[in-house]
Length: 138
Image 1: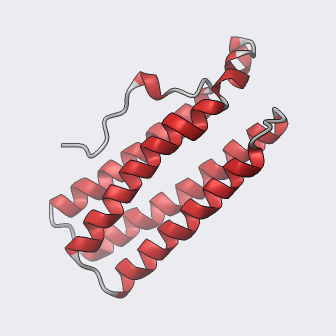
Image 2: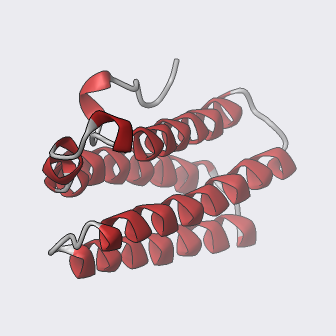
């Protein structure tokens, strides 16, 4: 059973960012399912690394697009992204140093809560910028 169910209502109005968000949800679900299935720690570390790399890729894309749109809250968005990067890197370092089930549940809960609250609160604030553009542009 997936940790997060993707819904069309999570769309931020830009196809690439929506695809990124859906991919991030899928990676979180893969991490969750791999842990639930008792995958080897090397597999979990690999998925976690992929999640971190894709998160960085997405944040760079999102920040670049928002900069092009002159999004007034871009600095706040960058701060949110930096805070998440630091928190996820801390989780990963702790997990690599001493893996345990409690930490993994903590990671999953954090990723689920952050991902959904970030999309549904922070990212939805820029949705009107993309909705105002012609459909061929988003």
